[in-house]
Image (cartoon, rainbow, N blue to C red; front, top):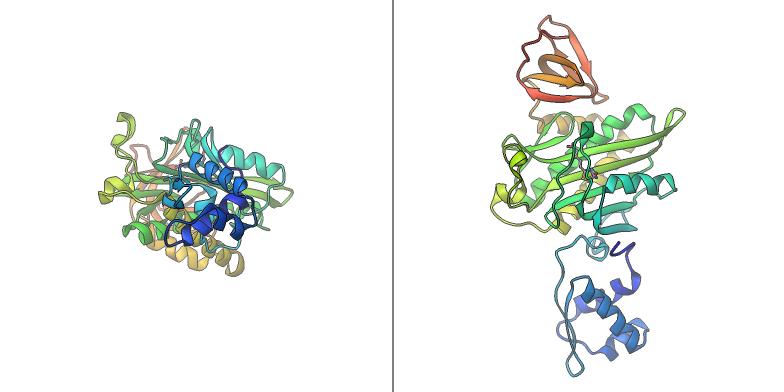
Length: 334
Ligand code: BTN
């Protein structure tokens, strides 16, 4: 792990360096922070090891020249306007799966608002047991620990809320609005930009904790042959690179605003926004649930997040899980 939680010492040094108009002396830094000059030097050294470019000379002092393109807690928490996500942010260069670690931390009592991010995942997981392609330094691979006082049946609504937050964040940052494919795939021009994997632990009739995992293709210059036909990234869409730190911050802020609305006012308004963003409703689809397939017209999403399909026989079927694809299968409906 490169940084377990925001290191107050490092964050303080960065804050002074960021606020300075020009180079500042080690003596000044030490006085500002109440540290010895040796302690300042050690912290500057640690920041450099994380990728910060800091010019330092005994005569001219220290100057921050560049920050690394990494999802470091010090960067993500800088100016972040959330009440829940105030750290710790657990940041890793490499992790098997941010969801797996977040689940482990949650089981050990990690509070709501705990965040796990990785620059790359070696065992990133998608829905329905799929693998999530997680190349280093180009995507967002992030998991949140939440502890809502809700019954387990409301989990789909948290997933849909997360998808709406991604639509808002991508629109704000990149100026394009992804479509949502039920329940929570984010698409641009019919190709997959991102996905959400929500997992929970329950006790009797309430949620103990939820882990919301988001995978978003941000600066991927391309995809491996098996994915190239179906996946896209913001860079491929907009022809430029985006700050992953900024995108992550905007998503956390949008997520918190929507999650608060969901907890305090219920789901109706968020569902309305989800409906406006979806590309699924009004189209013929086939839902695959293991060996079972259901075809029909996607009519609506119920208040609890279930997809409502009208089959060829006119029956209305509620679908709560599965993978949908456009069009009807050759099989008759249910
Ligand atoms: C899907 O579309 O199937 C969901 C993909 C979810 C991927 C994210 S990446 C961060 C988090 N950690 C994981 O192992 N999976 C989720």
